[in-house]
Image (cartoon, rainbow, N blue to C red; front, side, top):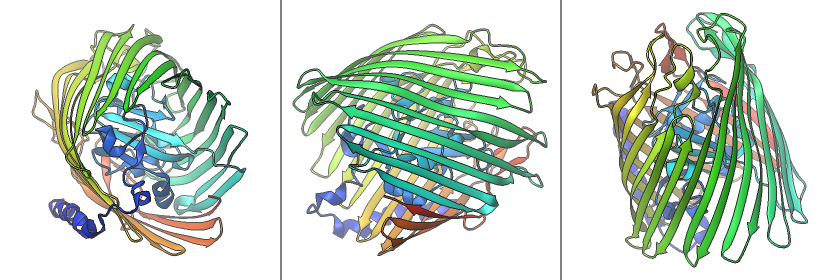
Length: 611
């Protein structure tokens, strides 16, 4: 990997030089994709440089061009992001942001938190990327805005917004390697103050072996989406969202084929009222479900999170203040009908969390200040106070220097606290402190961003061997550097990112398991009239499977290729070739030491109608 990372460093250094001559300020429209509006970082629309955060936006054009089979393919190699998978196509996946664990980062869909209350992390592998219009990745703690688990960062997926007028249909049909078939359709439009978007998709594949000389492990997913809103003459707005994904995934259990049926669901309704010219109020009621039936062990696990969130936004010129409250209830239900290492019900099957929070966004141009504070009261583990402070200074019209300090905490999951044979009801919540220094250069046709950070985590929750209770580890330190560059030069779209992360267990000096410390990504796309061509090169360094750092998993490089053809108005065809060099790569291992294999070369062709 040493040579690859020298190439990565050279590429990052050369890209700004390639676009230096294009850095003019005559065409503001071209800057939208390079300095996009993001919501997740501050609860309000802000351009990337105004957020005073390390953010990455994967917009609709990016998702269309890359047309991935999994959302994790979009995230792999992005600044500060690492991905591990137990095979391809619906197999367990984890997303590590800035060296933190999968359950130390938040996943939200249109503002609704989705996770397993038992395992803690999100089931990324069960989300169809075609159901989403864009993704925002915010790196760094956001506990003072979103509460528990936002230690490493927050990922928010946004479903398709309604188009003006209409109705506007869209249809996609395709397939490819491993007997894969993909179908999706949608209908959206607006009129009379009402906006609507409906969509559905189906994905099925025979899959590939996850163990050498093993059998193919299949996967299927069916997803439905409904989104509606109505704006009244007074400016008040009401809306609803419902997204449900269900299907079956096969996996290898001790050399035998096993299956799990799953459901991932989010649903919510909201009302927003402009109380005065400077005060707006929004109330959201939502529910998220993570359900699974494991037919090998005969187990059923259903978790549900219900949330009521009230936000009030006050504006005074360029300044903005948010004051809010949140109530959240987690519940879990399960049963065992066969032989399983999980024996018996949870001692506690429900818990409540009450919170109040506030945020101030203050603009004293060229100086900007952002401050937030939150108090959480959880019946399972007590009180937590989190806060953040960020200061930004515009050095000139193109460069913004930022510095921030933030705290966060991770709530112990139901498994951490109550799983028979493992759970420890005396566990404390993990707490963290993060300091960050960054600078962003924002031009019309290109940008660059660099960040240095350190996160110190107290009471990291660690699982032990069977029969031993889960424990808190005193201190963990994570240091890192992130670099990213993006440019639009004539009909070229270029993006590059490089990450170095040092996640260290301070008690042993070892790297945290399954984290790669080095990664890089390059995306290149070219418009050629009715045609488009592109590719991605993703590099990952080595990692360790075990906490003792004796079981090393080698690094790898992946090349993904893509092409598009607009062959008629509203009609297009896309070809993607994933892992074009047929690289055998591994990110995790079985308990017996065998590798979890990912798919080799895979080609997919699809035809699309609609905008």
